[in-house]
Length: 139
Figure 1 (cartoon, helix red, strand yellow):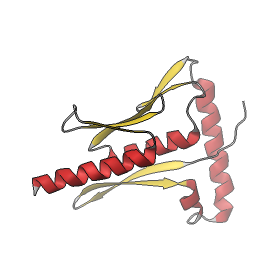
Figure 2 (spheres, rainbow, N blue to C red; figure 1 turned 90 degrees about the vertical axis):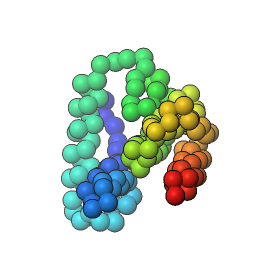
Figure 3 (cartoon, rainbow, N blue to C red; figure 1 turned 90 degrees about the horizontal axis):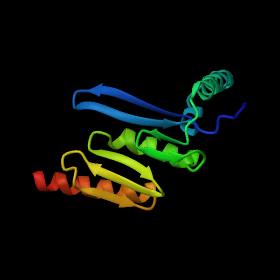
Figure 4 (tube, rainbow, N blue to C red; figure 1 turned 45 degrees about the horizontal axis):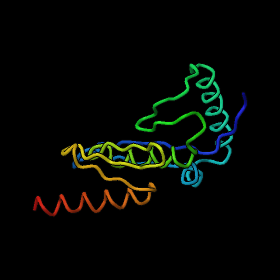
């Protein structure tokens, strides 16, 4: 089965004096920084890796992908990318999931506190507000 790379997402962690800093880079941003003659080679290599992974994957009616519960074909690449982005940015504070069209974030320091939203953007805003409130209460 031959496919086409439509999104590339790289999470990268840098150790800083203030602790680890997690970043997320998408293909659109990376295109601004990669030498044009290397882009084709990179995408070719990633295509081969994806094809190998698909060939090696055991068929299953449902799979789990880092908090993403999905029946085959029911999750868009945008939703998967949004989930990866949120998990990268917030993994130390929240367990983030997307299931049956509902985005959720469970606080790691208080597992009974769960935020839910209809969109990844809405969930991001809720987590920012919640995290900000927790920081204010600690001060």
